[in-house]
Amino acid sequence: MRGATGTMTLETNPWFVVDDDKETNRRRTYSSPHAVGNFNTTDYRDILLFPAISGGLGYVAGGTAGAKVCMRTPTAVCAGGLGLVAGLMFAAQSSSARLMGFRNPE
Image (cartoon, rainbow, N blue to C red):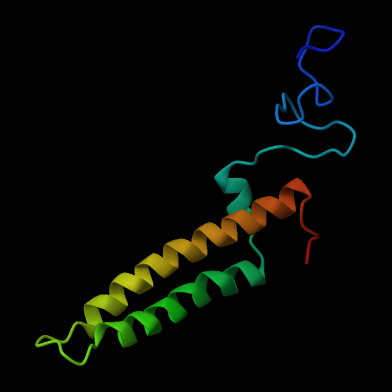
């Protein structure tokens, strides 16, 4: 699987990327401060929208008809926290994709 020069290339193994792509000027990875610094309005909307939806769904799911103890609030808080983490991860992924050139800047 080695190329003619003795190094691994994209032609011999497309899954093995050794360095940045010089032709398209794309970096393969960005650190977290770069990704967070590149957040735009859509990313902040996602960060707020995910916990709002999941917290509301958690509130509805916590109030079952046959339960002796109402679990609406604890379920809503737990689901909201999970939604916040999901929103942060989704926003960081979107920001990194824009930085690497896989998405168009909005």
